[in-house]
Image (cartoon, rainbow, N blue to C red; front, side, top):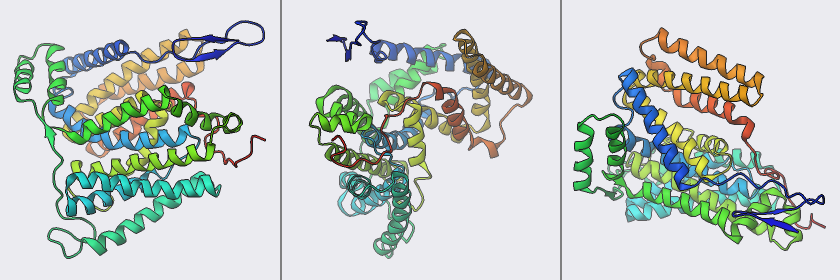
Length: 425
């Protein structure tokens, strides 16, 4: 006997009482309310601190550029880990993607560059899948090996293919063709005039919307589409259910006729392709050229964003946005905007501490409260964050949020485990 809910079918225990259904999915209305609340907080922060660039179209547009490669890398990690495979080789697959975009983009055009990034990232995924799924190699060892091999292979290939070309060399490609962007001129001008009125909250919303209709790269839209499609496939289709079952209980899945090894293999291939697209974005959009070392550890940050998002696409987007936004503020306004964020973090930490006290988590609540008070004291004791520390802000904030969110995180039950066909028997 089972009790059917809107989202899932929950088995009924022997005692007759139905188990609690899984956590509610995020509805569009909740997302809109969350967006409005976030903009209201940033509007108040601008009013209180005088930091006037927190929600401008320029800041939001630059945030899209910073968020997209992290989100795509995290999406690659999501596909692999939902199938039970840890993919710490995302960084190496991104590196392969940067070269693929550079080589194919220069010789065959921008769209070929996207496909080249996808192809070379998928090759990295193929290597990882063969090692972990077929031969049972430890997932971490395989991922680290891919990161090392990809770095050396790309340096060799770049020196072989880009040296002698105009504007190219052993560490970079010639300039690459641009990916098309979208601008809706009349709407952009209208929203710009609303921004100029400097109305509280309304101008901030207009600035964010203006970024969506002004010089928005098609690559960004492609990344968002992949996020939506991945969410639907993984959580709304029979294929996604079978794939996720391989990451929760592969023995049970195999006993029900699921080809566990095949699903794991496909998931890691997709994971590599997503990471390759993340690297391709850096080469084609963020810098318009391939450069050695341009991934800058974003594969690892994407993995952290996926964990922050509790292995869900919506949470991944929020985690990527958090890192990308703080990185953008540090680059655009330096210590001024980061200084304003200290006040916001202090207030949010105090609110989180009160929430923990109400839940009976006194020890954790005290720790959060102390952190909030320290951040508040730091805000009032300095006028601007020193430049040497500004670049550290995205990493520090990511670590703090991960620490605060650790209590609610739940990884797939069988992630990282080596599985052999026939284990169900």
